[in-house]
View 1 (tube, helix red, strand yellow):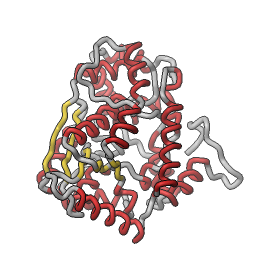
View 2 (cartoon, rainbow, N blue to C red):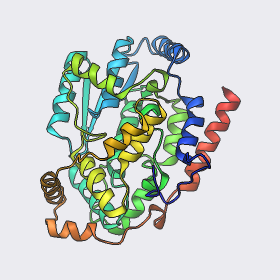
View 3 (cartoon, helix red, strand yellow):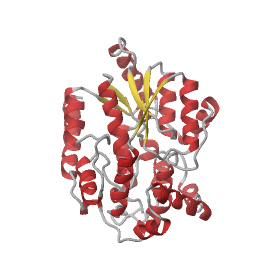
Length: 361
């Protein structure tokens, strides 16, 4: 990490606040040892007992990326009966489609695909570009999580398995993105820049997420990868060998949109290179050395010819010419906080959640 994060702070030993915070957090949420395996087995045993009379005992959102793919593999090998849901936002790479097909077939699990209304998704993504904001993945991310929660609710599934994990995702500067579940923020941007009504777009507001789903429906979000010694390269090797899975070349590159947004739009417009955070997370979890990470940062993962093709592809899908799209990318950058948000409400919710955890165990 470096000062491309304007809020970074280094101590006397040269350690940044991100690494210090991540190492402190690791003691609370990451258990890559026998203790973690024991906790995970206890969670799984409870799920098997409580949900034994249901067709599915948990639900997993499958993007085709490393984390969600390995999560599906882990769940099946632990004897669970997951309902697997893929949310198609219109940007799947051909390799992602093949990987998902292989996973479902070889694990013998049932897949439900929810296709987001493309015209509405397109209008939302155009709105976010017009707003000149850093986190262009919010329209996709919100739809994916909302559709998954709604699907679990309709099918009376209480346990939602999430691929989020400390080992590969412990570090990400706050100003490089924003809370994808803030529907007020998403709506405020669409109301200002959008041209269509959102009739079918899957969404969930703060009270649905934390009151209805959590307290009333007693839905539980489980992060199983935090209870194992989860290592990216080992996971990739297993997926390739066992499921015929193929790597995309970068984190979240299963989405053609996310690949372009992370590898071109963010570095060019905001000088944010998410590889710094991704590699820093691997350093903190002991998967690579700092020296190795610095060498990886020198690699050119996005060829110039590929950038041009992807820019034209994204522009065309969003009904812009390449020239129009470039002019939008060249606009003055904005912050998410320049638009209405529920940021204070989410911070309060997280603090309340941690307080209740300490009280209730």
